Length: 361
Image 1 (cartoon, rainbow, N blue to C red):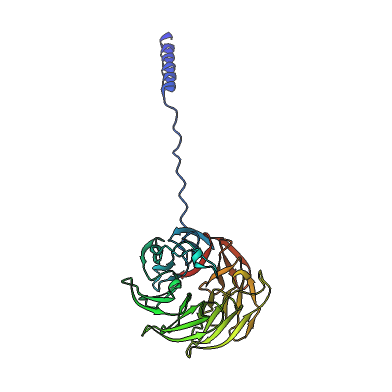
Image 2 (image 1 turned 60 degrees about the vertical axis):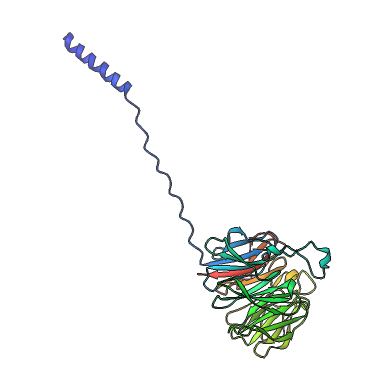
């Protein structure tokens, strides 16, 4: 009896010792939550040059949100997307910022080493090379085959024609002082260039690289847009509050379209131009007036406008033709304007946004 109970007692002691010496159960491993999938690559990207901060803001055109801002160089202004969609070409300038009528003698000397056309890789948003294409480039255009750049050199009163593969200037075309706007006619045979100082547009033959005709249009012409068939050109006239209509085949001034209405200044100050793909509407930013005008090209005046933002300048139409984008310098933002509802969404950019380019994949 005592032996049996002794064995039982010993068993209980051993069981207790085993229980005390055993490790506590380990908690089940925690599985880390999977990282959220990156958003899909935007179908549409909006590229905005920021003149004062020297950089490029990239915006998702589908979601209307900024992707990032990337360094470029001094005073980036005009911008174009290459026909293959792989590069951006941006006009960079080392000339000091100056408003109309400022005496150049009162300004600091220009940094000519900063002048050039920056080629930006669309995939990485990095500058691949800088093409030296004359002093103080402001605006530019690129041929449909991607082989030629036409660059307005504002301080030099000329247009530089650049062979894109080599980066060499192959021709220089002299013209009036302060050339700014540069747009190739849709057929590629002629490029129009505005001369702010002379109040004229120069028509340049792209084959001979010579001026065909000088067309007087009005006071302080800025930008140019063409109808899709190339029959008409529209030129923004900052000091006239109007756009000039030009016969783009005969290179002849036809008439003005006055921009009317109430804005932040007594009259509109037309700057940037975009044309609807079907030619039905010409979109014109009105600078310090603060509006975007929707112009019927068959009329001689237009009072249809949308309040866009502070001093809208660069402008671009998204591929669906339902939304238009303006760069608003003083407020450091970009407006996405729904053309059906007339509603505006602002997206922050860098300092003093200037030019707009749009690319779709």
